[in-house]
Amino acid sequence: MGIKAYAGLPLQAHGRLFGTIAFATAERARFSASEIELLRTLADQFSASLDRTRLLESLRQSEASYRSALLAGRMGSWETDFFSRTRSWTAEGMALFGLDLPDGRGQVGGEADEFRQALHPADRHLVSALHEMAARQDSFPAEYRVLRPDGTLVWLSGRGMVTARGPDGAAHRLVSIMADITERKAAEEHVRFLMHEVSHRSKNLLAVIQAIASQTARSATSVPDFRDRFTQRLRGIAASHDLLVNENWQGASLGDLVREQLLPFAGPGSPRLVLTGPEVVLNSAAAQSIGLALHELATNAIKYGALSMPDGRILISWRLAERSGEHDGLQIRWEEQGGPPVVASSRKGFGRIVAEDMVARSLDGVVRTDYAAGGLRWELSVPPVNLIRAEGPPREGISSQASSGDGEDYL
Image (cartoon, rainbow, N blue to C red):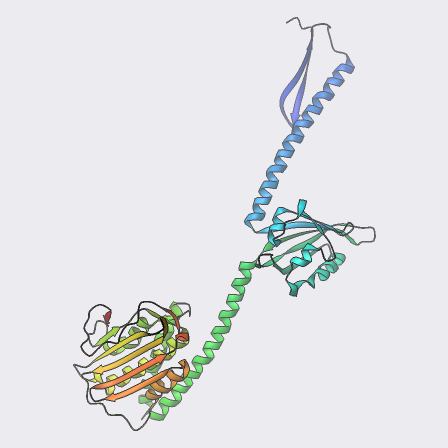
């Protein structure tokens, strides 16, 4: 090619040799020292340019990863400049607060302070407290509520860090990074609610057990008699509680409640117990009260009623009363057949108090008891406030000729 002089200079970036840049001439035998120095400067500048490009790309990737991490963690940040009284928001920070600011520029102080205006009214006093902490320390925690323009309440938690101070030590720039902890706060509130419910229900349960113990002691003829009666009644309470615990105390199916209460008196698969009714879910209070009443009715039936005779049986039905197209509560019917002649006792024992007075009073319901010659009949009507869910059309109570057809269930 007629080349008389050649100069090849290394190209390096990130401390690594990745090529050369070459210069050649066909006119002279060599490059002068000044030309070599100029060529070396060009090569260094080219290497520096490659270094800068790669650093910018690395920074872009790092920033993308940072933003992805913020989004995944529902976090956001912003910088407060106390000297210029401006605030610079990242997109993630504005998303946390529900803000939409041109170029992410905000104002510190005054009625236009977007940060203060976004805080829940009950937390706006914290602004001055946060500024006071920035004046005293370089890093501090923060937690407050934000009320977004769409009405959503968001709990935020994080830290503020002073990155620059003036000659007098006053905070110049403050960087804040916060995370959305709304779900955690909701979980904590749920735990507090559950603890309160456990305490409340424990007190109620103790009161019920105390009443059962007192009433049982009045009618018991001996210590063994008291022990047997009291134990049976506690088992009835336990059966209702097991159903409620399995449903996280959100309620209990009436069908499941009847099965659990009557299973010990007849055994599984017995044709002596017939159930009929739609799917109904009771609230916890109704499940406990109705469970106690059913247990006392079953106890009475096995001692003196239908279950005391080989051919006796009990028909239990429930239906949703309807008025003007709306469910107007629940009606439960207990009917005994094939037992001995019924004779109403002149004394109102504890079982009768539970099945009539206690259940009616606790559920604001109405109880009707009929001591018919053919068998005891007991009906309970309660308002819809005691129901969590009810499905299916209202159903008529079963008759004395009920069989195991559609809608019926033999225990």
